[in-house]
Length: 332
Ligand SMILES: Cc1ncc(COP(=O)(O)O)c(C=O)c1O
Image 1 (cartoon, rainbow, N blue to C red):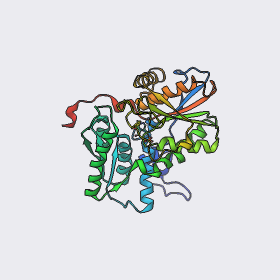
Image 2 (image 1 turned 90 degrees about the horizontal axis):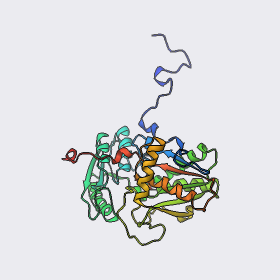
Image 3 (image 1 turned 180 degrees about the vertical axis):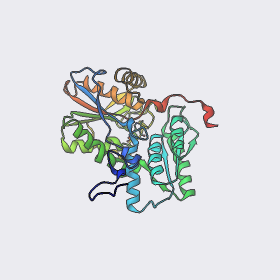
Image 4 (image 1 turned 90 degrees about the vertical axis):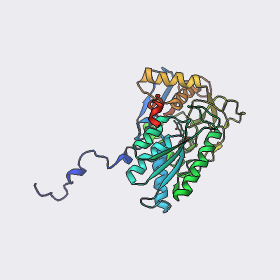
């Protein structure tokens, strides 16, 4: 082998090689849904299903773990625990696999079983918690509280670092520092409105804050399941809905009204209709909250609240593969 010349890079650093899966998080493409919505306005969507955990929650996973390591709360090799609807768990499983932290996740049995399989394939342990009132595919506030109880016991038993996505500012910061700036750059600063579903509100709060700081005229709308519109201030009449990971019927701590111009409600039928249309017209197989986001973007463009030729940015939060039925015997 010839000696390495001065200033010559060693072979393993040549070309375009990512050092680990962590470098696959974020910088997702922005795609125009021009076949689904033919104008005069436009719907532009971030392909968050392309993150290594196949959802938007990889961004907050990396941000929260990095923050815990930097603050000294999480030391090398120490255990990590989180309560999750599944996507946060998959994101944390990516990050903890690469950084070498044992990870345990508590998740409702009402959340898609595919997510549990995904986490476990990445070396995490998923504890599936019985539902209190919901049904498979529909997870309520009471179900989340039951998962919280189990999760907190595991934190204590393992003396683990508790990620605490609902109350962790590094969750919203991930979107303030990545999702927002990416949208601003990818649109060439041409954004008229932003719409997103809310679970922890990390995505909505961080992205909206960044976009409004760049241009206060950008309109931002929360997308809520019809009948579970807590942010709109409506009574909760339908806590069961298909928008897993969002619409829990309460106002999350990370949510700030000052970053929001209004809310849009979407029925299960509308979410499913647009989920299918994104697949059939755009060639992208996405999940229910992605369908809800696109349905809401169409509603907004047709509402008269913004100019009809406006550009509305939204998110394709996760892949439809997370909801494709799997045989129950895989969990025995
Ligand atoms: C599929 C899906 N969409 C949307 C969200 C909401 O994201 P956030 O918690 O940032 O509000 C989640 C959160 O888990 C999710 O899993």
